[in-house]
Structures are given as C-alpha cells and as structure tokens.
Length: 102
Image (tube, rainbow, N blue to C red; front, side):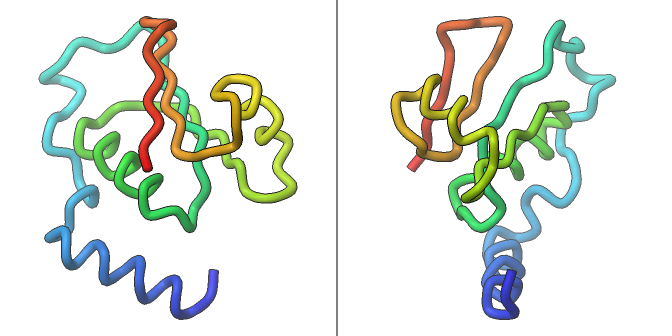
C-alpha cells in the first residue's frame, strides 16, 4: 500500500472513532459457532474494511480469502458469487446466507 492509502486507512479509523480496534462482544459472552465464517476480501477496499471491523468488534473468528489481482481465490469467488466482487461473506452454518456489500 502506498503512503496515501495508509493515511486514508488511518483517517477512516479516526472518523469511525476507533471502531474495529478492539472487540465489544467477547467470546465468553456468546456461544462459539460450530464453523468459522469465510470472508473474500482485499486490503484496499473500504467495504471490506468495514466487514473486518465488525467481525473484530464481535470477536468472531473467520477465514480470510484475499482476492487481490493474481490471487488463486478469485476464481472461487467468481464461482460462488457469479462475479469477482468483494467483500463476500459466507456463513457455513447457514449455507444459503452470503453477504455482498458495496
């Protein structure tokens, strides 16, 4: 990432008042899911950032599948969602549930 990207990422955290830095709901206050969530994302996407921040706030474990250009995960994302658009969140406990933001 370039310096400008780093600066804009930091500014986004400041604007959101530090949201996503620490969990608001911890694992001891919720049941442990049977399977982890899966997130197809890429680092520079502001929508992906929001999803990661909320997952952090909820203290949820997840598998991250980076889909930046050249990533082998891009083909799988296209198969799942019909196109390469991130973020794409999959809840394996509820197979029908997938979230596309943006």
